[in-house]
Amino acid sequence: MVAQAASGKFAYNRADTGFRQVMDNPPDGECIGMPGGAGVVDNLADTAATLYQDQFCSARQDALAPATRGVYGGASVPHSVVLG
Image 1 (cartoon, rainbow, N blue to C red):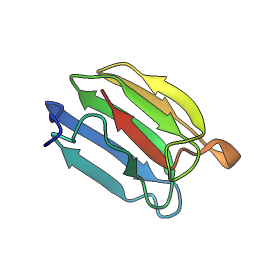
Image 2: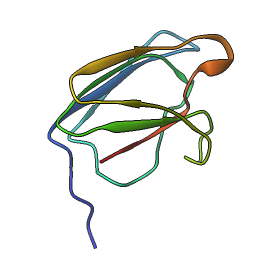
Image 3: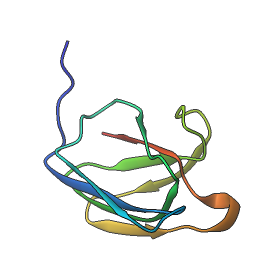
Image 4: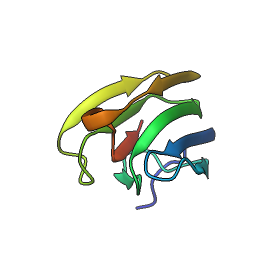
């Protein structure tokens, strides 16, 4: 079964390098790793995003509604996300 895709973009600035990572129409319901951690997150997709402090989507940290931004730093940098 193929996961539905969110419409829009999900973007983050890597906490380790500051480089911007952009995902177009990311899949819903799948754990997506954010290598380097996310210092700034922009959920520009049409669905909510749940952020996690680990790379396995098991330690829930925050939720971002569509068209919102989250700013994180220090030990609270998220490392994975699930949309939908």
